[in-house]
Structures are given as structure tokens and as C-alpha cells.
Image (tube, rainbow over the protein chains, first blue to last red):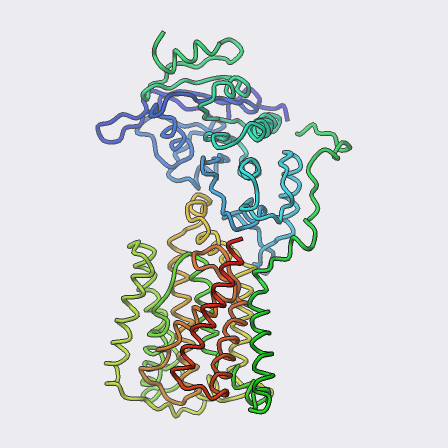
Length: 247
Length: 330
């Protein structure tokens, strides 16, 4: 699995997005390599959500190009982004609370047998396997989402994204609603995604977390890309001043 | 690939299913316990009034057949987070349309027109709910009144006799292998309904839509299409119930289905379907429906006046619904 580790899974080039007269994103460029975790940071309203929506196919960029493993794509919908191997873990997790873990894992993509009936056996065994690999500690694949803790739910949402993402996972504030222990658990899961050779783009307000998890940090301020730093070669003071624009 | 060692798993989560006691969910059995309690009560109190005779018990099943069929549709509608108040009016319109057509053009045309009328009303409901984004409660409240009016004006309040014996046999009074056709209809509809609800992607998508429509939507499920589909399914099944009424009574009248709405909603809720979506049971709805029918029958046999029947039935439904909702709230 060491092949093509140099070729980026995602290349954004000169992305620009305007809503009428308002420019939300200008001249944004970024590439993410397989096995790399890139953090996207910036104040509220800096354009992080808009960027996530562009990458996940919800908004089309006004100009600029999106390239996925060397192929330039235009994505008109979230399902097209999914078809290209991009999965999003939304802030609200997008889980159906009264359904089981395994049904959520396959929501909208349920496998069926030759009679057109749900193939529960496959769903359950794949769920159990993945949940074990990622060490998401849930009572069982049969558990109902509503009976799980916040951290377990987040684990299920990330596991689902991992199941379907072949190129890139976008994580939108994955630990915003979690306690200390659960945050550590989710961070460990995110860390373990590196070994799966997919790219991870994570939005976080916690600089501690960003420095703990990411390989590179990309800073946005008022829709402008302020810069990208290797996490190992920068420090919090530099990132904070990039975010705020104050020295 | 993951570098995890295969051996050192004791630290990771136990994956076996939780113990049996925790898995058994009381709420699912409330309807069966209630059914049993009411049955035993009538069996004892009415033991000399003929409640337990085969004839009476099978009568209960036959009488509840149309309500059971409607209840299946409502399970899908409620599970998707919507409601359909117009089913009673659809029953009347479909039965009348079918009766008029049968008398003029024969049985097959009548069936087609009857079912078509139900599907068409379901389509109107569905388009307004799914694509115009009006609340289904208001849409179907309006179409309930609207089509009750249509049913009245359709034949000038007259009752239309249905004399086509093939039709009345197939939908109402006939039998196959010694089993009444209404029982066949009930069993087949419940079986198909249960399988579609529990074992198909459509059923899963209905539940997901009612549970969390945003999650369904970002998972690639077409939420509007699901909403349209459940409203049409409900309309189609209500129309089938109309045909069953017409076949059994050998006539259609605008009053058909008029009082079914409350019974059907009660049957479905008592049967374990959540009023606001995401969870339900087709088999539970059948048991709920039989329970309502048994209640009707028993109260009549007990000699209660019509007004007393209504009061007692209302109280029992209230109690049953309260118990099943309390169980769910846990």
C-alpha cells in the first residue's frame, strides 16, 4: 500500500467562490496526499464551511479546479463527491438515531441479496469488522444509535466514512461536543486513519488538537488563504497570529 | 493496511450481543399483552353471549380487514414522519368510483378506476407534501374534507349497489380453500407489507427519512421521493380497503370509511409505530387493528348503547396509547 504515496488524492487549484457580490473564498489552493492529515483553521466566518461544501460537492466553485487522483472533476452534488471516494463526517453526524449501528453504516447504500431483500448478514459482519479495526467501543452492531454516548456516535460516523471513503475524509469539528476522554478516543481513531492511505481534512477550533493530529495546517481568514505550514515547523503563536491577523 | 496484532484483542470492545433481557424491548409487546388482556376479559365476561364462537371470532377478523389494510399504509406514512388523515375519504371515493364503473363497464374497469382514484389522491397529497413542502397534517386535513365532499356529490348521497358477483366474491363474500377472501387479503397484505417494511431498501429509506431526513438526504436517499411514495402507498391501500367494503357490503356509499380514521390511527400507534417517525411495525398494526375490532365487537355484545360504546372505546384507546407511548419514552 505504499504506491502513489507522492501523488495527491486531492488538488484544489485557485478555487474561488462568490455568492452574488460577496466573495466567500478566493484563490484557495491545497493538495492532500494519501495518509496525510491536513487541518483547516480559521475564525468563524473565515470560509471553512464553504470550502467543505465545495469539496463535498454541495457548492460548485465559481472558478478554479478540483483534481482527484490526477483527474479533474466537476461535482454537482454530494452523491458525485461520494462516487469519487470523498466522505464527510458532518458536525451533526447525520445518523438516524432510532436505527441500528449497522443500518447507519450502510444508510442509503444497503446491500441486497438476489431477491432484493436487505443483506443484514453482510452489513453486520462488515460493521463488526470495521468497528473492531478502528477500536470504536460500542456494545454491538445491533445497538441503536440513541443508546450510544457522544463519543461512540462520533466513532460510528467516522467508521461509516472510513467504510466508504477511498480517497478523502472531511471531518467537521469532530470533537466539538465531546468530553475529555471521548475526545482522546476520537483523536486516536482519526490518527489511525493515516494507516489507511486516505487523506484527511479536519476542521477544528482546538489548536491543541490540530497540533496533535495534523501534518500540515492551512489557515483561512475572511475567505483568503493566509498560508500553509508544516505542523512540525510552526508553533501556536504563529498560527494564532495567522488566524487573527494580529502580531 | 492496519498493523494491529490479531492476538491482543482482550482490551478492545466486546462484540457479542447484549444479554437477552436487555434486548427484549417491552414496548414491542405492549400491544400483544393488551390484545391478550382484552381477549381474556371478553372471553370471561361474555362467555355466555357467544363471544368465543368461531363465527363471532371470524366475524371480527372479517370486519377489521379494511382497517387493517389502511393501517399498513399508515405505518409507512408515520414511519416516514408524515401523516395521512384523508384515508377515510379515499375509501369512500374509491368505493363509489369503483361501484359506478363496475355497473357501467364491468369488474376490471371498476377495480382499475377504484385503485386509480386512491393513487391519484395519494399523488395529490404526496406532491403537496414532498415537493411543495406543506405539512402533511394540513394537506391531508384539507383533502380529507375535500374528498368527503366529492364522495357526497359523486352520487348525490345515494348508495350504489354492486351486483357483479365476481367482484363481490373476490373482494368480499367469497372464499378460497374454505378461507374467506377478506382473510386472504389481510394475510397477503400484511405479509407483503411486513417484508417491504422490514427487509427492503425502500423500507429502510422510509425509516431513515422519518428518523432524520437530513441524514437520509446526505446519504443519497431522495427524501421527496420517499415522501411521495408513502402518500401514494397510503392512498392505494385505502382504495383497496374501499373495494373490500364495497365487495363485502355489495354496495358503496359516501359514509364508507367515515369513522375509520381514529380506529386506524389508534391501531397503528398501539401496534408500536411512533407518531413522529423512524420506528414502527406492520405486524403490530395488524394486532392493534384486531384489538380495536375485538373491542367493538365485545362492547356491542355486552349490550352497551352506541354512546356508551364510544365513550368506553375512547377511554380504552387513550389508555392503550398512553401505555405504548410511555414505554417508548423510556
